[in-house]
Image (cartoon, rainbow, N blue to C red; front, side, top):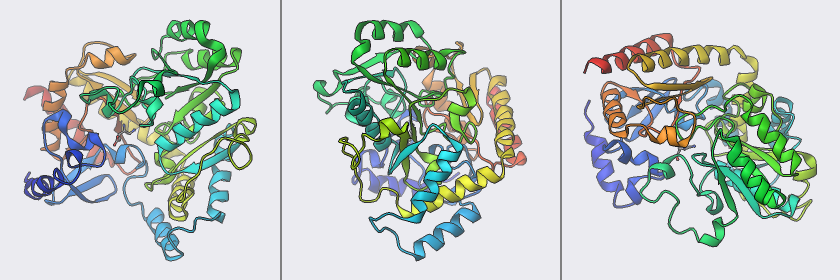
Length: 421
Ligand code: HOZ
């Protein structure tokens, strides 16, 4: 592999953007490399500016469930662009997309479209606070819900590996109402509810935690959260930015059979365009402006091009429900290869993580026991052989409908060879 053009771009980029990137994890700092700059993508492949081809297991961190540049999505987006890029006014598309989402996820009785997962979680929490009249929120160590101030406490994703885990620039007063419990640890939640229960506006959780690698909820954990939030009249928010339309059409709430009060969606819902959604019970969403007093707005919200990409993607998923069992099988093959080289592997549908640890990974501390230096070696082994995975131990691998059996086999072979290197 030659990385000359990427290196030249990187040398310019570092003087123009912090770390040369527009989102920290892309800087490759966790794996001690400089980033490759991507030129284009198609199906299960991405191509960098030096012409290197990679089988892609990042899939833009989740949106690419159909693979890159699906012809039907591209065709729909091109047609939408011809009609204008943004109107700042209501469109037919927004109604169509909201109807689709509601039909798939009945808990989303009323919803609002925004531009990013960060906006969706931030707004959902504001709504839960407005609805309950309470200030405190409860989140889990290692769960990541975007980068709004009150949520950057013991967060996952790049916040987990950065030098400042809980972010500088966030005043203490912004996080004093954020309680942190341990994922998969009912007692840690009970203790906080016993102490502060009547002040807790909401519990926000990734139903499958996918920003500290992939950590599955233990049997009964999500039901326990449903029960305790009901008992204390707190709002249960499922952050399904990653799991929505990924674990199955109806996301984790369908997969595990738990109905949250509110849900946040991102990634797949925008079909590769910047789009996210928050919503839930009508009674709660009626607190959002202009009906209610919780203010939230956005010039590009419900953008016509983004909603087009979302609608096209969701329709393809609806018409091809076997996609989910297919990608799960493909993911299991990669999981086997990761186990063969001795990793501790967690899989939920087409989400996967192999940890360099002997522990079974059930929570944040287990995840942190991973040997990140070894992960960096593994990353280098893969990328130099044309396999593109996340440049961090604490991100998920994503498998798409476009991954061919041949490419899955090829990937498994390269993973297995790592054992003998
Ligand atoms: N874990 C992040 C998305 N949920 C990775 C993407 C990013 O931070 O750039």
